[in-house]
Image 1 (cartoon, one colour):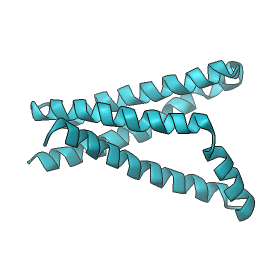
Image 2: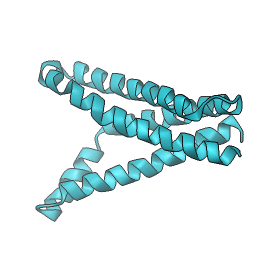
Image 3: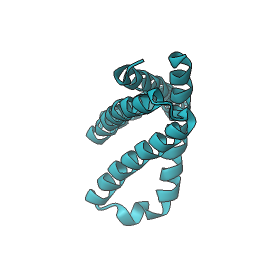
Length: 141
C-alpha cells in the first residue's frame, strides 16, 4: 500500500461517514413537516460555508491520510497514529468553524457552545480515523 492509496481510503471512509451524517440530518429535519423539512435542509446545505467545511474535511482527510499511510508503512502503531491525526483534523475543522463565527460577529452568541462544538467535531472525527486505521492496517497485511 502506498501513501496515496491510504489517502484515498481515508477519503472514502470520510465520504461514507458524511453520507450517514447527512441522512441523519435529513431525517431529523423532516420529522414533522416533510415538505418544509426538505426545503430547510436544502437551504442549509446550499450555504457556501458548509461547502467550505466539507471541502476542508475531504482535503485534510486526504492529505493527513497520506501522511498516516506513510507512517503506517514505517511500522507505527495504527491506533496512536489515528488518534494523532484525528485530533489534528478536529483542530483544523474547529479553527475553520471559529474563524467563520468570529468573522460574522457571532462570538458572544457562540461562546457557551464551544465545548459542545468541540465534542460534536472531535468524537466523530476520532471514530472515523480509528476505523480508517483499522482498515488500513488490515489492508497492509
